[in-house]
Image (tube, rainbow, N blue to C red):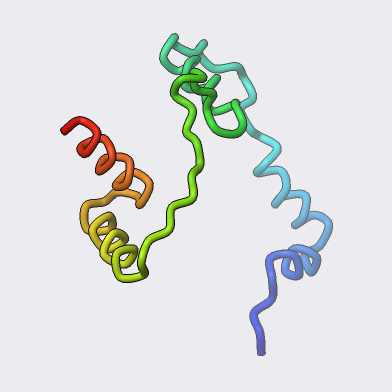
Length: 101
């Protein structure tokens, strides 16, 4: 026999029992809290934003298509995973090192 859900148990209660159960949740403290600090306000505003953060046009990433042999791609993914980075971050780091040399 399956266990009754909360809804089923609630509906099986008498009206008085239901009122007592609901009364527990009617006593919420809805008084306003303290005002946010500047740091909290900044965090709140960042949390309200949707999507990826906007970047300066010179910092925007561009997608490129790169063809690699399967064995090299597998090695790349393993190396990236071992070092806690994404494939894209590894490729970007590698390209920076080659270009700087």
